[in-house]
Length: 594
Image (cartoon, rainbow, N blue to C red; front, side, top):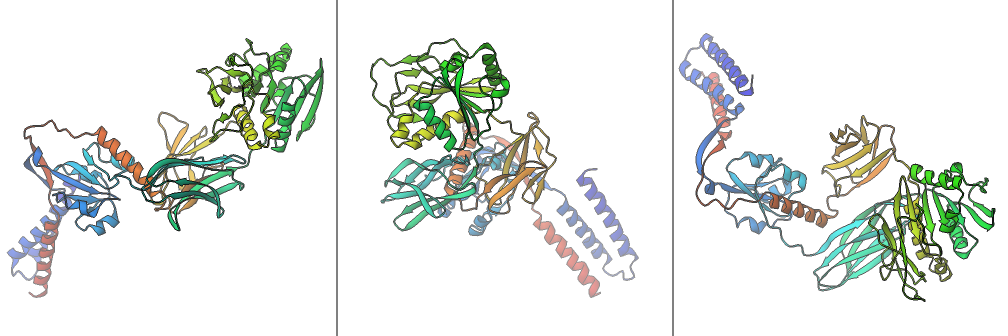
């Protein structure tokens, strides 16, 4: 039986019992009045429990518009609209505007069939909230953004030695200049000046010293006033030392400086340099010695990266070449190939990297653009050779004229990095060690053998905020029975189309770092911001989501004549509460004073 039938049956039974009680009581005075009052009380109770509605004829043009007040609205703007239906999801707003009805679910607006459209005042709603409107047309015209950070991003996960890069856009509407400062451990790390009346991009960088979980600060300062003080959470993991094998045609300065830099940076390095035919000079740094005269699959399997001259790779015998190709294609070994004078080759190592030469005989030194590094490097004599742009390769390093000087490409399970640069050591001689480190760190990182991960966590919510839903995504080959976030245990939701993907919805209770892991899994962390953090960015995100909803649910303005419809109106329960109270009060007083 449905709810209506259950309510009616229960009320009939109550009425029968109450009427019988009245007939059998000793005092029969005012019996008819008491029976009518008893029946009235039961009817009022039934009307409270039943969903009573009625229908009226309305014209579509006569339907009313509802106002929805969101954060950032102007109180003066409410009086501009002649409507009795004003709603809000915010408890603070409902206290500020008493006539705004507090609702907890946007589906309540859609349930009222007299509402043709909703006019949203303020910053709007996020994507999840807008889905609850279920395509109800919306009018939305947010106020123009005046002052502050309009966009920001940074690399939240770093390896030791990596550079944090905080980039974004700041709009300065003030008459004076504003200073943006990246701060860590109470120390200014980098800064930039924003001129008055400008909206310009900014970029702040620093190489963190402390490993683990860190929270940097991004400050906007004008004079002695701090306009913004935002948190920049960053996780810095210790760099995993890689095993590097170097094969050089002969001892030279480029190989010598590279070997020294690798050892200083904590890499385990084995170097084999040809002295004469079948005779080699071998060095082992941070690595136990082992036979290196003959290369085999077991030798290549000990290393994550191979750095080799192209001429050396071309002279490997058939067994060594086959072992190398198998290790790259099937097991993911990466190779950094240093090109030499011998550029033309049909080898699988060079097939994706066709080269060309400059037309000039004596090229001038140039600055290089290194992927992931802001600004150009110091001048370097890059030589005559450069690589042609290819659709299946990725440019890593180019000069100021756009010539590609390093690129990488996939090779089965591994990667190949190709570069004609052979005198980067001149940077170290000139004191530009940072440029040297950036270049070789990039080439080695791009080529290094990738370690398979058992699980991967992604925070889908842009800015996880206290007391707001946060969506986390787990990719795991093992089905996680339960997920633990701090002390809370949650059951994940499996993606019906991607069975290795799981979604976790969580409402944070505290600000700061939160731990998350699956049973017997590794411990991961994410940061939860306070309600006051990144307000401008969150407001702009809501505005963008609301504008997208408006564009996809446009109001149909082509109707030129009145359309008669039936509107369903819910009967207010307050009348039945009053009727029930009056009936109960009469029965109590009559019994007391009879």
